[in-house]
Amino acid sequence: MNFILRSLLLFSAMLLTSGCSYFAQSWVETQPRSNYSPEDIKNLSKIVEGVPVAYRIDLESSEEQDPDLLRYAPILVQGFQEREKTEYDYGADAIGNPYLEEEELVKINTKEPRVFCRIEHTSVYDQKVKQLVYALWYPTRPVGTVEQGNIDGHILRITLGANGSPVLYESTQSCGCFYGVFASEKLEIWAKKEFQRSLPHKKYVLEKKHESKSDWVIRGLVSLKEGERPVLCISKGQHFCQTILSSGEVNLENIDQKKYQLVDYEKLNQIPRYDGKTGSMFNDEGLVWGGRRWKEELIFTSLEYPGWPRHLDKVNIHWDEAKWQQPNLLMDYLRLPHAILETNIADEEESLEEGFSEETADESNKEYSPSVLSTSFLEKYGQEKPFAVLVTHKFCIGCHKFKETVLKDNKSQKALSNWNFVVIDLFQEEERKLVAAQRVSLTPTLILFSSQGKELLRMEGISTLAELNSSLGKAL
Image 1: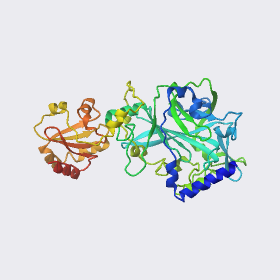
Image 2: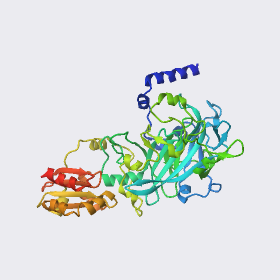
Image 3: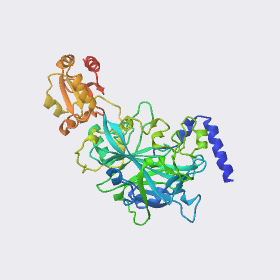
Image 4: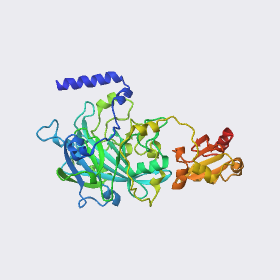
């Protein structure tokens, strides 16, 4: 009966989608908020939906790695079945070491827990930042109507700020499904200082409205103190990332403990073979041997090998809208503060409430209306002429280019001669306060005001002399 029911469900899904994955996608919540209470965190079995088992790095047996890879190697709290009530093979929730059987089929040796790591980089405001990547493998995906199959995996990527501390955590299954982002609490604080408030209908200031693709959700905030490790909580069976916590806020003493060895990701190209030789875990297209999900291919027809575990360099995320290795990925989808590039920034002492009040929501969802310059601004810069205010940031590359090219041009100086031209640097706290009411979310931004301080026009992301002249002309 179970088999017949599953078959009917699969057939119904195929019939409803009729070869189009759009409707199927709309059924799946891929970026759920992490809303666990302190009481939930005391009971990890509730979070991982099973019996929690903690995997920790074995520093003695792990290979020599980049110090940051060792320092932030995560604790994995994995959900398992109760041994007396197993619905599938108990070992399906254990992580392990891949090997090749005959017929180009990958298997996982769960007696040898491994986490595979490497260093990556991304670009933030045209500067390179460091990323720590950790990948782990399960023998199977044991549950799900269409997702079941040989080999499952999970990936965690931690982006470090210029001061060496984690600021972003990206989590996804090894096929690219259920990609989600967590941010450090201090990154949200920095964003709030720079951008003032969240965008309409957004919970966090870091969240951005994408013009043509799906918006990213910050699933939750992580508060990681010095000496602590991130704790990746993975559900039983489905192997979803339920949340990311810090080791300082969880008590792992009363749950089973295991150790994993941290090894280089490149080792996956030389795993043991049945004949005593070595071979790659991946085929020529970067897909895991024997990991195909034919049921998902029938439903999600617009996706490239949906559900099939793969090499990091071949991972697509968010319904194939973006690639794991896409340049400027984080900048494209998030409002990142420039403070992420500061090397000597101190840890913030202030706290940030996790809650999102109705008052905050109402304030951020108001329709935009022209702003008015503060009394402090008018007193400082006078009221003889209308104001042309250029809002910049110390670490904004576009701001520096605009100043060096456009503002030094004689034509721009002549055009600005009829204006009280003021340059504001959001990096400077006093200057940031002067334009707090203007709610600038992108630099460089030019805002034009009457001599009484009423906003006339603004040009976000201004970069050329033509845009400057056009803005000045429209405002007069």
